[in-house]
Image (cartoon, rainbow, N blue to C red):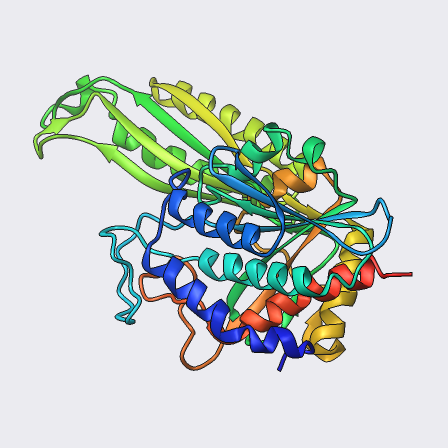
Length: 390
């Protein structure tokens, strides 16, 4: 049970909000319905509301009791994924090929619950900026909001976020200072060889052979170039070539996902990828063009803000249910852009039980409504502990 009786009383409301958002998922920068629901509720509760930040983002501003200049930002993401839902729940997505498979519906409901509670009690001295962000799933909505002047318009001493984690026991929190999640980059290799008849390979430069060798060579970066104490992943996820069984194609395309946990390793891995592609191309007489795109940077928690958020989590669930030295995750998160622009911290909330054990991005994933109160209590405790009334 959450430590706040009023938040416990809001459980049914948060559950209804969450399931309604789940039923009507919206993809990157299409969160018009969700943003309107958020904005309307915040206005109803007396918050100052700003819409259209970073395209479809919403910020609600709530002032407490007192004259403090302190300010905290709390962020929730709102977007869904382009996936077909297979949960079979009564509130299953009504939109073909769209579903809330990552729990952003839960994150939004949690932050709404905290906003509702804090708007009623205002038992703090300072300002809370409730940040509802679009387009986390590949759209870089965190970056869009920052570039749209988020922290200039709504200054924050610290900014905080959470993500549900169905592989962690329900009601636990995991956090650490420093790198918490990996960067996410994409690489496209265009291999130009020399096509010909499959019966006469001696007259060709086979791009499939070159692509296979390139795939193997890329794996040596992690196994032999990156220190074993650092983390990196290079996964070739697409290999496209050929049109018929008796034709050696003229060209081929490989696509890869690259994950690293420090800026230094990120720079080094990009450099080695380009060097190896050039070397493999020269070895086999093919031309390899590399298109390297940097997407989300590493999610790096700031030390002071990590301690602040850890304290709030411990106050909510107890020290034995908060891991403050959790391993780095190789997934990525565009809250990283906010952490580059403002000190802050990100935390994981465990949701696993016998009814909720599918991983995020699985077609049968569904957010565990039983932790909504814990998430809202975390944000309420953070605000009241960090900006107490004198």
